[in-house]
Image (spheres, rainbow, N blue to C red):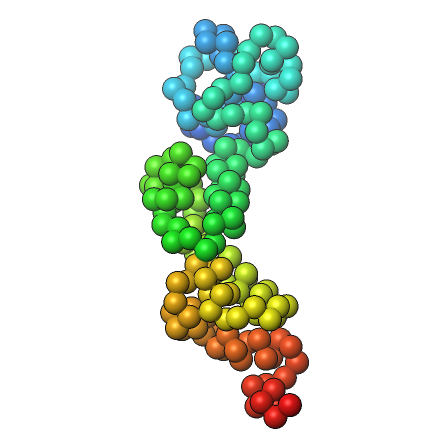
Length: 195
């Protein structure tokens, strides 16, 4: 027997799948709270649920947005994607710091385990890999477009020592910071030395 639309959406609520996130909103009659279908809160009984096609309609009907899944944030993005986007913003803003998974999780008020698992699920890579890429991108940008001293670029990218930065940069880019700068400015190190 074919499931009704209500049964299909309710099944996504039970399994906390994001299939209907942003398409329908789960209004719980007993608590007067409206959630995303994928909300991690305790699953309400089917008889206590109504689905609304928009958050605005649910709010007009007297429901308040859930504080856990925050259906009002991130448009149609599910909460996991919102968390990953927030993690990206924190990492981009704090490149110069020694930013561990624990510190990143603390800034986002989630557990390190939850952050690691969720971020990898959404993006396909760990926060550490993303942070490493952000640091590399920033270092390459500064080397190519500024005359900022290499040691200072290293500090901006989160490395307290110039030698540690140079070794890391060479592993990532197969060039030393000086070689990368010279190539990006149109010449080799030997050509630059002759000028």
